[in-house]
Amino acid sequence: MAERALVYRTKLPVRLWHWLNALCIFIMLMSGMMIFNAHPRLYWGKFGANPDPAWLEIGHHGMNGYLNLLGTEIPTTGALGYAMGTAEAFPPLVTIPSTYSLTIAREWHFFFAWLLVLGGIAFLIYAILSKHLQDDLLLTSEEAKPRHLWHDIKQHARLRFPTGAAARRYNPVQKLAYLSVLFVLLPLIVLTGLTMSPALNAAWPWLLEIFGGRQSARSIHFLCATGFALFIVVHLLMVLLAGPVNELRSIITGWYRLPAERRP
Image (cartoon, rainbow, N blue to C red; front, side, top):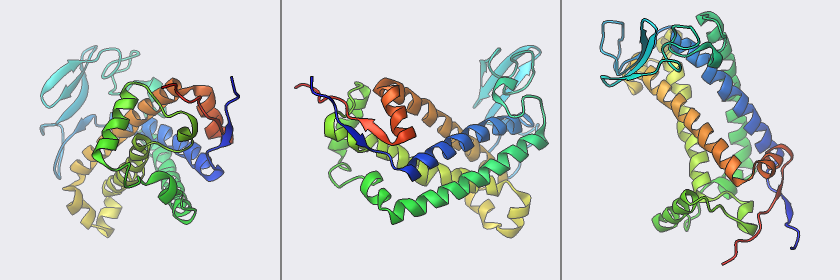
């Protein structure tokens, strides 16, 4: 069997941004869950307090945890609401800090939020100037055709990933996922985070108008964070299925061994 080619696939700025992003997102998700514990209810509109109807609530009845979504209550004892002997929405195993402290959680959250923003701006500038955005992330006219996209989605569903020279570049599904994170999830999570700040509301009142109030912004912020969590789960699953050693080598060193061509 001929030795598979080892190619330089992931440039240093992309690798650095990947790991900075991973660090920031994980810490922000964990500190964000502690912040959510301070008031584990979500509303739509400008106002929200305990007597108001919430579209999502994580709580407990005695030692029984539950998640109430749009009026439907789901038992979650041991995972949410009441877990590890703690009556909190999210258990201490997944929060920063592990003991209740809204102040410390906010400090962690805000610091890494700004790190995420600055890293994102730097990466976007690099991506435009180096043509990484145009050459590697934007879909070609052929890839954007519904027929092509549907074929790629079906291939992924069958766990048939690109092989040979085709594996050197992002496939259409990867491009759509990365573009969604870069141009939808990241901007939304930053802007809704800013909208929840009373000081910034005074400076930029138009943010409240855009998102329909602070409580709506909080709900959208939570949904974007959930989107990030789902993206991470799917991303890690794809890495495991595609070959974790090869994928990790690529994102750590930049070098990637091309998978063998699939036989007809």
